[in-house]
Amino acid sequence: MIDLAFIWAFLIAFAILAYVILDGFDLGIGILFPLLHQGEERDVAMNSVAPVWDGNETWLVLGGGGLYATFPLAYAVLLPALYVPIIAMLLALVFRGVAFEYRWRTVRGRVWWDWAFALGSGIAAFAQGITLGAFIQGVEVADRAYAGGWWDWLTPFSILTGVALVTGYALLGATWLVMKTDGTLQVKTRSFARICAAGTLAAIVLVSLATLGLDHRFLARWTSWPALLYAAPVPFLVAVLGGVVFSGLAQGRDVLPFLASVGLFILSFIGLGISLYPYVAPPDITIWQAAAPDGSLMFLLVGAAVMLPIILAYTAYAYWVFRGKVRPGDGYH
Image (tube, rainbow, N blue to C red; front, side):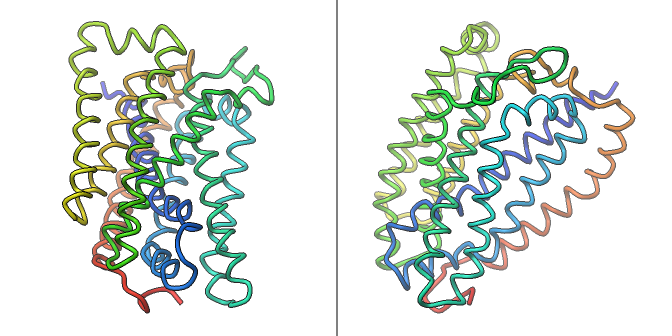
């Protein structure tokens, strides 16, 4: 028999990972924006993501909408627990999106829209990290409803994950600009990427150790047999990819540092899955307990089988059309 709940858990996890990677680098550019010179550097940086940034957010809609449709119990429990960081994230994304349009239509007010872009990106990234931390540490549930407090999401652990995600997004943004630009801007972003890579690796270690200390079950999943067979390679591969990022930057490679940075996010996501599976609302609600009826899941799966290839195709096509370096004077005006 087909395990529809497991299939949908995989699809939603894939959508979230796709959003984190694809929107992560343009949020990272916003985080680095105040460090770029006004004028040409900022224009080139924004033009490097202008053709794709709004399409990247498709995956956020797919992940959130998919959770509501396929795991309604998890949606009903998690949303009340995370209202504040989620609303902060959405408002910040609005400011960032408006800044994309308005900064090109003014001269005197451009500095304000630059700050709207930077602050919107930074707050959105931090709120996403806070949400992640609150999700990992778990929510209090009673009678199939959220039973915790208004501020339960705000803990030292969630602040740590917030800072970690901001640092990781900054690494994606810096390596994206290394790949998409040249000249002085590329040199500058290479130096940013080295700092962000060191910070990201340190953050991965700190968050991983803190996660293991949250619940004895997390530690058991990483150290018990046979879980050790597939868990042990993850930290080793993180170290390898961290070395690839630094070596690629030192050797003047353009594409490799970005791909290795994406790999770090994928491995971190796999590590998160090892710690949390099979819970969709930790520490008590599993994907099967939260899933909608099989009839609904099958109906939605047919729609996903049609729509996902289309979304993947137009996303790939957009990146293919706008491949290559971005230079002054190109792009969005």
